[in-house]
Image (cartoon, rainbow over all chains, first blue to last red; front, side, top):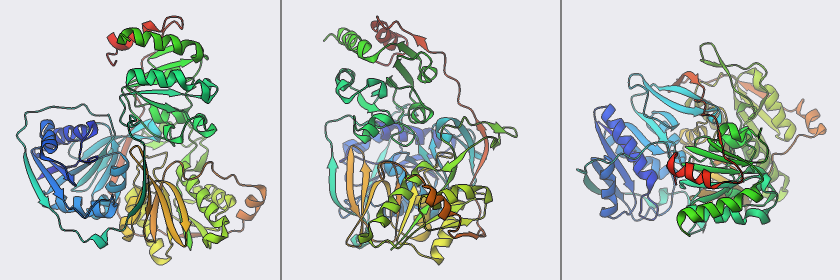
Length: 323
Length: 249
């Protein structure tokens, strides 16, 4: 028996979300009285793989095949399903990110295993297996039972604390056979920005809305983000107007994020916007309208014009940072 | 080439949801129902592809799993421009059940491109598209922010962390769609609304399959503590609170 955790790598490296997943899987394995097995696919060096042991993985499977150099959801599903059977997995855990969302539903059908997606806590109960998940885009939660022998869970990002444990893991490198002709996805071009903090990974996000009035006023937002090591974001009207790129749009139909700290500047806080940011641990709102709904979601608020408040805020951060 | 768009019928996204029956059921009183936002964008893009006759798209069909109450939403999809619609007459119990129903229909009448929204705004499952592809044994591409047809082949933009990829896959394919695929949803014109009344809407009885999950009940989010206001003249105080009280910077 085991809890199998699929741990994605980015150019051979893991990141915080990988360790969150392993921490979650290890705690879940404890609840089920079994062991956590981490599965990595692709070339990752041993010193990186070992890090997964620090968060409770007892066994780390490194599945290697040089012909798989593209993300194909069918191929990944088959590999993970194969290891789930081999390791007699009772639960398979993936991240609720682009990759996890692409694989988990296919895996659910292949293993005939019920799927609990975007869970943010350990199961409420084991028998019946009941998970707690967001519904109605964060306006409510549901208690969902998964009624199959094998269960699949995707874990919402930044919803589980890292739990470090003494490392007594073993690494199994397994070379997997794969017929390259079964890989149906061909990637013809990759467009990637480098050096920017990813919105979905960022601990702090500084976001501007229509109250910023024009794209020319974004300077202090970018400056504040740089000072705090934060990512920048925006509300839907801002990306619709083309003031900022649509990749920055956070909200129901844009990116759904859960940073530790979210600055909503000149954002009124429509339901659709809150759906994308309500899982943030702390929200700071700056808005001229004291009745704006964003203030009911925020812990800290400043009533005032962003163009006047922001420069002072930037100065205050500089003083604190000793710049 | 034939395109199928799978649509879900969801409460308007501004709805303040309430639950009844010991918090086991959604209180549907006064709810305005809409096409799930991601499905609506998928439909818009499908119609754009059909409008450009060089793409060779013969038809755009919409499919929905739900009871008769969803028909106004299906008619809206027809009014926007879909050619015909299929409703599988069942109360959707979970994503596995819904995907199985859709797969049975597609097996008997194949499509080249199947578009599904990446999630529905009610249950946020992010599941039906991938499950459907697996039931059919079709390739699937998720996090799709663009779909085009070049020389009869499908070209897909796929969002990845920090950027995007341009991807090609053989058809038939399930494309699981997120934001970016179409700029704004298409709005039904009066002529479309008139025509929608006579467009074919076939009702198919459901296929036997179990659900793998059950919603036991709903909970409302824990209300946040009241907002602490800071003087606009003194943002320094905010930074101090973030450092000493929240301990996050």
